[in-house]
Image 1 (tube, rainbow, N blue to C red):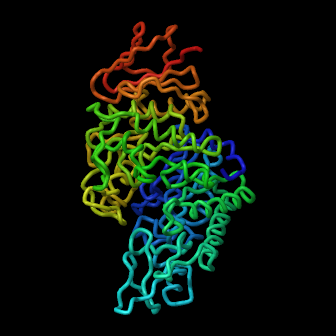
Image 2 (image 1 turned 90 degrees about the horizontal axis):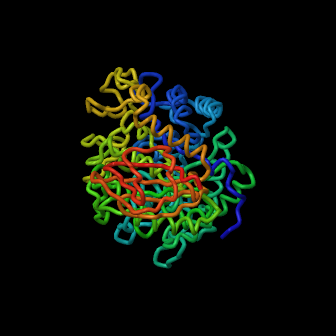
Image 3 (image 1 turned 180 degrees about the vertical axis):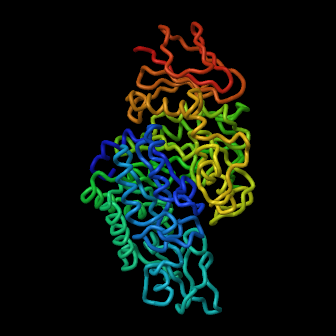
Amino acid sequence: MTSFRPAPSWLADAVFYQIYPQSFADSNGDGIGDFDGIAERLDHLAWLGVNTVWLNPCFVSPFRDAGYDVSDYLNVAPRYGSNDDLAKLVDEARSHGIRVLLDLVAGHTSDQHPWFTASANDPADDRYIWAAEGPDGSRPDGFVDSPGTRPGAYLPNFFAFQPALNFGYAQENPAEPWRQPIGAEGPRANRAALRAVMDHWLGLGLSGFRVDMAASLVKDDPDKTETARIWTELRHWLDDTHPDAVLLSEWGEPEVSVPAGFHTDFFLQFGGPTDGRALRSLWSNTEGTVNESWDPLDCFFDPSGKGTSGLFVDAWRQASAAVADSGFVSLPTANHDFSRLNCGPRTAEQLPAAFAFQLTWPTLPAIYYGDEIGMRYVPGLPDKEGSVLGPRYNRAGSRTPMQWDDGPNAGFSTAPADRLYLPLDPAPDRPTVAAQRADETSLLHFVRRLIALRTATPELGSGGSVEVLHAGYPFVYVRGGRYLVVVNPRRNAASYAYDIPAEPRPLEVSGVHVDGGTLTAEGFAYGIFDLGR
């Protein structure tokens, strides 16, 4: 494993909170969330106990893919405010004890980025991957016809309007002369540009980046060796120039990405040889965002009780062994591309058990905005800024406006309802922050207590040991040799024989009973106990 500077000490205690800025809080009444709106809601985040926020892309963009099509890396989109507004948000967040990370789109740009418009009209420009036309005027599979005077076609990285930046090919092929080596001029220029972009924003007080599609840089790189080398190079630069900053990857394979240089990788609904099975085995209940190519799978957090936590536990063990002390693995409740916890057959009453697990497992927890109150994945929404990826994969359902109160537009915006970025959840009983703040029995208060317990109890954090006693129903494990966690996400009761030498002290318990040598968990129950060892 390459030797890096140790991760900044603050990262081990991070509780991430992901904000989709378009949908969090609108301060100026145009129907779209903005930086000032986020700043006005920092008290909520500080009260909740989160200490690290990452924002989905907020750079200048035509927004055909919700900002993941960047046309200017050094300026923010006017819909969110100005660069100065972002700097003020970062300063205000810091005064609340909260760090802010940006989302860096490293592998592609918008087709409206000046780099690309120049490249589309200059056959000598190698910042993107271009192939000449065949003798019959054809183009290689997957390439898109040039929109400029340059003949030939370019390679996209995701949507056709997102041309792939050229970081070279891991393997050359004389039949495909567009395959440039890693050390060619174009790839070198793009690596330098990544450093310049990161340096710009870190110099303004940001604490790091979550990197989009981090595994996509070098092409025809099946084991990601060459892509990993690029991130290793960038990590060494970061260690030297910004040692307190961090890199989080959208890679989904921590055993590869963290040794390559990332401080943290997420379990995702895709990534790695199993295409994200570990995360899907926990949360994906065939509703909400569903890729038709996913293998059929009964998830563990489902009322039917057909799943197992074993798939996740095995994947976590493999990842944590590879990562060792060089970084961390993060477990999200959801994200902007994946269903919320409250989706389909999973309802609000089942969410406390999910959070009891997520906030006591030795990963860095990442809470997707609104999940702390049990916001619902909203089905049936229209395509918005490229949200639809397939017949059963509409990401808009996880991107609806934050529900702050029972006022107009749930307190998100003063704009007319038809001007909102996305429609609100129409459910008459939709949860709100205000209502749950007033109810100490609410999910919001429970999540807050769990975060506080985790923060105050090192054994429940990322560095504490874990001993899995039972991977079925109920899921039973011990943290730090002292804290017993019992989670039963199915509707039927479940029990486990466990010889407890003394009466455990309940810390957060609902529906879990200790009777002699047996733990009994009612449906959707959870329990966190101090064994006093």
